[in-house]
Length: 229
Image (cartoon, rainbow, N blue to C red):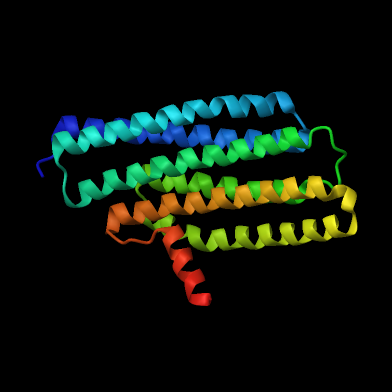
């Protein structure tokens, strides 16, 4: 398709807005973990309230993408890029929802005595944050090489999440008075692991946009799990 300056400016604005949305989601995740560790219920409520902004941006981006496609009728790589942006838009909004889940867990256990230091959660969060940063960086630069490196890093996050869950199940079994805290902490760990999956989903969309390869993370895992059964 002939590429007009107007079309390029539309896509550029969309990309920049997705970048802003990704930064907002990143902030939401970081602050949700902080309020869980510090039992800051005021911050937790702020995280929950700010989720409306991510919802609003998701709707705006979806409408913008539909308009760009309708007005410009892109094909091939241009169309793939817009489809990748549309799916990434949903992934970023979903990360915000998972941050809200963590903030709600923070409120639920705010009046409960701590059962163990939250060192493992902090370590898990740092790995997830770095993965999210690189997933968004690959999107904003359309760096397929960087995008292709994220899957292996996600395996380490999966392993750590499983270690945390195993430890917490043991704590809950040995100390029934801590079952409620352990259950909520398991939820936090799982939500962080899912955010990492979303970062890899975003990276997979970059590979799709650049190379036309369908490597969507969730599809990949469904196939892998089906084969293992």
